[in-house]
Length: 380
Image 1 (cartoon, rainbow, N blue to C red):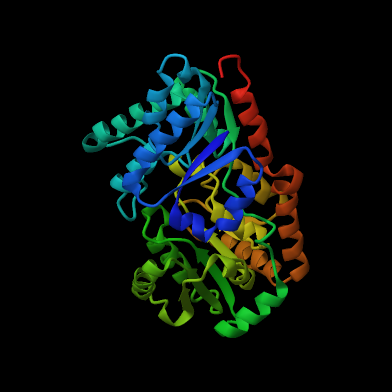
Image 2: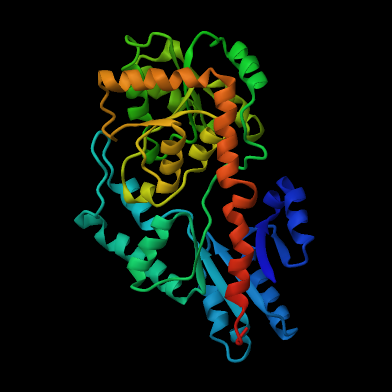
């Protein structure tokens, strides 16, 4: 059995998806009304299932697995518990980036003296948890390699990248026309960024500065920022600092509309620093750009699997994370933009993304076999 503890509000929001998962008979969902009730509900559930002679498998995401580890120490019943850890990114390097980065400078790869202790403590705790886990679920081969280096051994791992759901994220020429008309950008070259702007690694200031450089050489350029509702003011303030007020649109759009607005754009910006926290992950948003047939300007600071796809399909231009612009880059930029207005090319790129990472090639297909392998032992 796979057990999931889900906040009541989240369950209500995605009830159809949760009910579909539960209908398989292999998953049980426990709804939690309040965070403070989690530990008590968790202990009650495990006690009941173990007394019934059940075997339990836990997929631990964004939670401390200490309680599961404690239950596994119990004689007899503890041997019927298995757990895997999922790491959506690398928390130690994210902590380092967030706390040591200074605007305009490259973020450090190793912690400065004042961050050494908390950084090492975080890494030590995760290492203990990973060593005790029956397997790890990681976002890239680079992240698998990283954890094998940290643990000093090979690991049982499942590659589960964050990528776009190509069944609902795809290019629409009809939506492109409607939204460009609505925004008043029909004759513009629209460069889009989608995501939050409060996290330093999104590089909002650098993004605005980058767009501002094109005001003279590409007077038709328009910046479309699709951000969280809470980030609207922050985005507008940065845009104003770089003199882009009259050539920008800042919006918050829901997930159901995101693909339509990405279809309306001409180029996407993915300008993260070449840093460990970026190199070991796949960005869901970069996946959505490509799934809507949207060519990208990218530093390539993400898992190599997406860089390979971009190179093979000619779907992007790579730029140093200094974001230096020269005449050659301007020409590459213009050539890439020419593709974006071609609905056949956009549809082709979106189809290639769906072919590479969807259907039979969806990495999620490996998950059931991974779980079966974890559970297929004599002691569980």
